[in-house]
Image 1 (cartoon, one colour):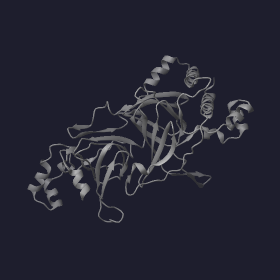
Image 2 (tube, helix red, strand yellow):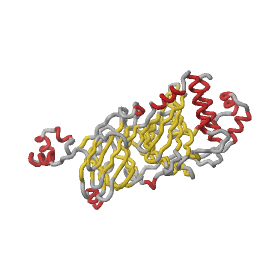
Image 3 (spheres, rainbow, N blue to C red):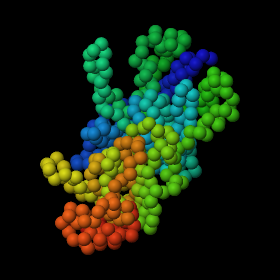
Length: 430
């Protein structure tokens, strides 16, 4: 079979599969929801999809420096299927719970990655993908936190005229990719009869998430294997070749990874393209912080990127300091109380500190708005940027004596994650 006919045939198969679903449509809406300040509470998320097989909610975060970032929280019940979509934006995601499989089309080939708790992966714009959750004995839901990077509006120059194009969202259903065409176009493109096209176009559009084992005359996995074999025949490769190629597509697992910083107060980890090859060229980086009870991620700032975080477990306090006192009406110091499911964002160059309460741990993942290795700059501890500065200069900057500066720089034994008993409680009371 010719290369040019492979992908349309696969699309037609996927279209027939999702069109056979008996469920009613639940349209996804445009999302524009930003919480007061830089926090979006879990209850403020915009619900996009809700069925007995799963749900999707979303949050938008606007970054003045780098555009807009769209977060989606996808939950699949065991043995459910997130139907195929065409990705419009760069996508990086984290698997919070459960397991399953990610499948996508890459250069006319079907590729797969097994997903489990702690996995991080990235898909490029223009990718067609779908996700299935496993049917596990413990019946654990597959929960995915994903971020999509898009600028909101794009501009093109055609015949010396500037054409503005509105953002079309994070992704679109492959159902929508075909239904807009005239039946004559579809008949010619797929080389099928008029009856086949009419049958497809008359069917009701299913929701984004359906049951993973639909009652059809031919099992979905048999169809998938069939089309994978067609790809192999085109390339002249064997099943052994494909299996080896699939093994190269692996997610990065946070649970198994060596932590960048780890002590009795918690740990932190940053993921870049050096850890996960799929992140190369992406505009998004990933990090995770896990604080034990009564601990703190020391005061620091990110000089390269805005940090957008999601609380995974527990609760805590976040203090954000305005880097300039020139215009307090636009930039104010903030104290934020966050808990599981909340989203909080800290702009680039804004000093921050995250603290756990004495009776609860505090774990959060983060997406940074650059894939480059950006090292946070810390104010306190062994890793403090002040350690590299001349003590006399520091004394002059703080209008303090050298002995005071010596005490500031020598007292802290840890470098990044510090003990901070009752810090969150005291900050909350103020």
